[in-house]
Image (cartoon, rainbow, N blue to C red; front, top):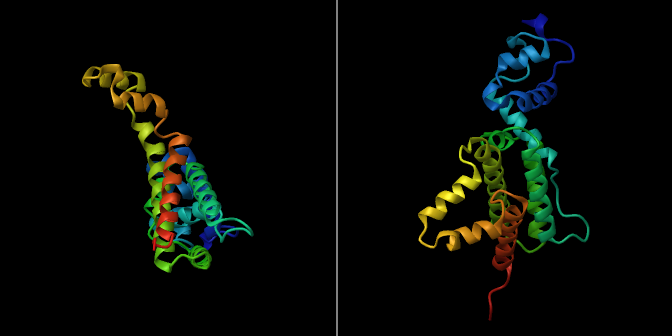
Length: 219
């Protein structure tokens, strides 16, 4: 096996190659054997650097998270603007790779560097008036929201078998109000439920709700 420990083959190279391969074949098509072929080695050579496929997937998730950029607010940046910027960057990073949201959502372990940066963010939030618990819950709520939204974008549309126009026609016949039904009016006025406006609305609701939780109670 020692002869297969090819010079230049590293954990980082494997993760970067796996992410590139992910964009081509998707999560279902990503196998250790396929990755080894892409790298020009036999499968056992990979286990010098990564012991299991889950460890590989965790490394890929970590790379996606770090690519979004982590760290405390910039000088003069409010925590509200920072959270919005952070969420948008994270959302874009998830969508940058095919099945990116699934990779991150199913991660079991992130790197020490990522955990340390996360702790720096929480510390900065405490400095802005958050309790440690509220800081953690806020970041986790935003993370889960972005994960879920991106997951629906990446899988929901791919699995959609009925055209939106046909679905609207079905709803028109189903509802007593027909084309004037409240639900249909909301769909028409709201636009794409998985579009940018819908994402921004949910993000603003979470941030505004956090501001309300952070505000001192009335006398």
